[in-house]
Amino acid sequence: MRKRIVLLKSQPNGEVDPYASLEPHYISVLKTYNLNADRLHEVLDYNSFIFTSARAVEALKGSNVLSHLISKPVYVVGQHTASALREIGHNDIRGEESGRGEVLASIIADHYRDGKVHGPMMFLSAETTAYDLAGRLCDEGIETMKLIVYKTEPDPQSASMLSYHLDQHPDEKMILIVFSPSGVSNCIPVIRAHSNRLHITCIGPSTEKALLRHGLSVEATAESPDPEGMTAALRQKGLLN
Image 1 (cartoon, rainbow, N blue to C red):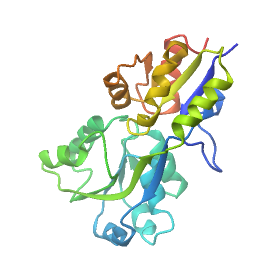
Image 2: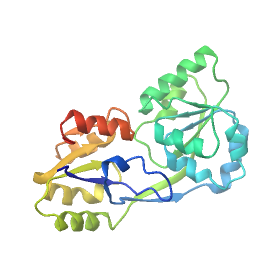
Image 3: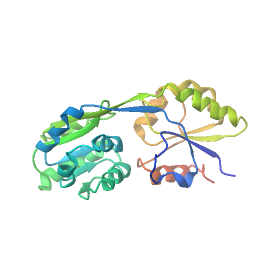
Image 4: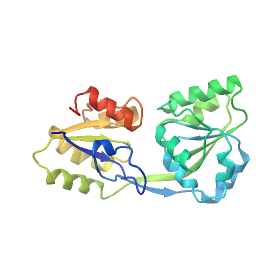
């Protein structure tokens, strides 16, 4: 019998669930708030863009700048962000195989050197990011304007929801998949208390480092931040057998 899988992230709302094959239970750990809606018109001043999360794409939905964005090259850090752009009709998507900000920065720098992209870029970003992508690009001589379009805060109910779910299945070992360094903060005491029956896994290295700093052991980390990468990591560790 397959172990129960718990995802510390919001359940997809009205869209295809990319993690459906894992039959997971979702626990929301973050609340999202859009920012700087009055500055979205600045998008019109740029001809190439960077998104590192689907939430940044969602922050632009309903705005009058999407028609401009759709016709321009956009660099992304993973498949989930690329899918969000395709849903709004965008096709010139680059770097989705990168998986991490460091790799995406190298791809963008190479494209500038090869003449595949020109001029200053706009990075539509969260309030906090694990990697200073804009700073790295500036070091490469690529002018990058960062526009913060959303912020996330830990959901105050996340720890109690996780605790309740674990208490409902007291004799089961479970696979816990963690998606966000900031989102997991409220849940650390609960995870630590149940660590003897949790297989703790992560969507990427930034999240893994955050858990290690809290003294937790991580059994598997995805090489790419998408369902395929996570599933492959679980299989490699024998957690889906």
